[in-house]
Length: 485
Image (cartoon, rainbow, N blue to C red):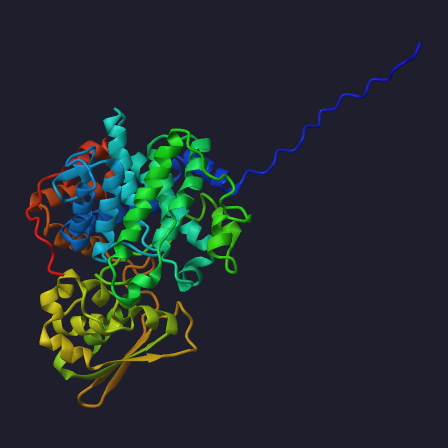
């Protein structure tokens, strides 16, 4: 008889394989509660939601929004749908509403910056369309749920850019990060509102990579495609969430260091893969996003602020200015050093125009970029005084130095390292609401604007976003006329 010896029992179990980055992000997005958000993040989210919706309402009278809506109708879109076109008194399918509203929100350069670049114009339209889709399915989305989804969307959108090496590296390579990185944030915000589970949201993040696109070639002729990048990213993120909810799969290794991975493909020499998940739930990326007080590319703002500071401090007028020199880094000069006034997109990318408008009209707000203002002969005279000097020693993220020489020979110099609207130099609530009213009252009745402002500034107290906010945005506008571009 042969005796056998039984192997001793063991309690050891195989170690679980670490979760992939997209799975970690998805689990974080699904499990985060409103109560997990710090108070300052909630308050900042309310400000950015208001600011972005204001930009989108104003953009309803942009040429881009009108052309896009007409093209969609021509392609067979029904004249009414389940999601609101902000400030247009019309609706479309949720996907096309996200496309139009995202494009409109970026159309006048009024939207926030410093996230994926323009995170608000991507995340908010996708989240809003998802909330209306949920309402059509009989589910209510509260203000607190909406805020949570938006904060998470901003977070992931910025992480995408940081994984590519951040703004200077990725945009310097020719990619407009609003379009390339934005779809991930839109997918998370929409997916959270639509109730995706962690596995579905993992797939949505993978699918969102298929919508990543956008090139800075638009800067050379003021092409309207720059505005479309935001709308397309919102559309793509929402589409990814809807597809994933139906069981459509995306690549689970999209954020891993593999052939075909997102950051390895878009940023092969500058990528930082750990940025996807570093300090999740601790370093809230919304905290670094800026609100724009001027209706122009953010890279023009420091120069405008510098000129404003000098005018306030010294007390000179436009007629007393003999010359303005802007000492600028090569990257920003390539993006914002031109002097083209038409189309309006080009003027909004021009530091010489921004400074001339600020001198002549006293500000660089939206009205200062209208065609009649751009054609004002005083602007041409002021632009002739602006000289751009490229300093090769400056880094891509260095702000310009502005030197003003007066007719009496005195010279003054100013550099604003953190432009107005940045987290460390924020606009006040009063200034934020003034901006909101000024741009939305071009489109919606004043009483509607006031109700919107009250609800959005305390969005956490709103019970039903679709009923209490979107119905206001769906009201008939006071005008359908296109802004004087």
